[in-house]
Image 1 (tube, rainbow, N blue to C red):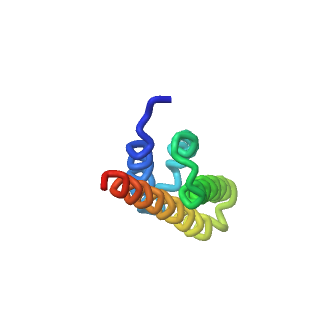
Image 2: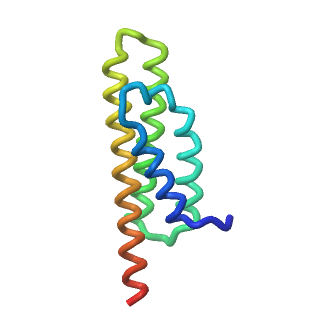
Length: 113
């Protein structure tokens, strides 16, 4: 694949940052594409354990957010809890992607010097 992993991760970060309100739990279909993009970026990036750990954390958190959305649809009594869990998981994924981007930028700045 000839994509730029940093660009892809920035787009995923923008997508995750757009999940700001409880009503966003209905847009979970968009998260499936984010998992695929993160996985493809992980395959293209160098073998840095911390970087891989960040991306794995992001993928796991996105899967958790999707599970929370399923529970939200199925069980009306636990919807407030599902929304909280969804927000927590998307926030965790966002933080992990941001951390991976910071690490990539630091590696790029060191390679330039």
